[in-house]
Image (cartoon, rainbow, N blue to C red; front, side, top):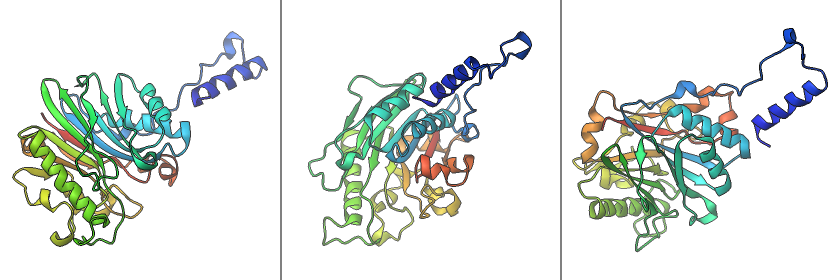
Length: 310
């Protein structure tokens, strides 16, 4: 039974027991759902295109209650596309979609331990043609514990490609070139393959590569798994680089703390990101709930959102 059903059942029982007045002067309005606690977290606007990345940590941590908070957060942030990681339950993923008006989505099912990628889009803002959501399967899947999930969509008449990722976790901070299964080596090779894929399949297009990348943008060159992108700044830009270089209070993984969730854009989107309306932010959803509640019920990661003026 969902929370709204429980509240309605309680109201009917109390009325039947005479514990709620039934005379005209005693009538009370039906109790409504509590206000969305995240309403102050809005990033989206009517004139901009927003894409969010969220790791939801073994979704759902606490069943229907987690679903309720996830729906509230997506509604409040008001992005047009939301890329998700660690979506274990297909049933509860469908419950999120059911709780959102005019949204559609797709959840992959190939990841080990069911740590699947998923993606959602607002159908009032974004159009996805049949076959426009699919997993990219490289010749060598060693770098990818979860296959990238690709969304080809249109925002109005403007085509955009979004590639959702969840790279290998952990490691010692050092790229071991002699060990192909070293965690940093796998992340480095994943970035090299993503670059090759983008430049082969989507050359000159508006592409956003994002997700839980499980590493930091600010590492020194020798051990920076993202160096192929960072060093090609005429073709690629991390929209969240200023977050990574800024204070820890704005990082996406506060329990470490570190900034692990990134949003990379290609050159055709540079102008859209330099507009005065554009921004990239970590959304502090944990500030809107009682201390510890967000981590217990929703995730250990915070969403990162890019806003573009297309």
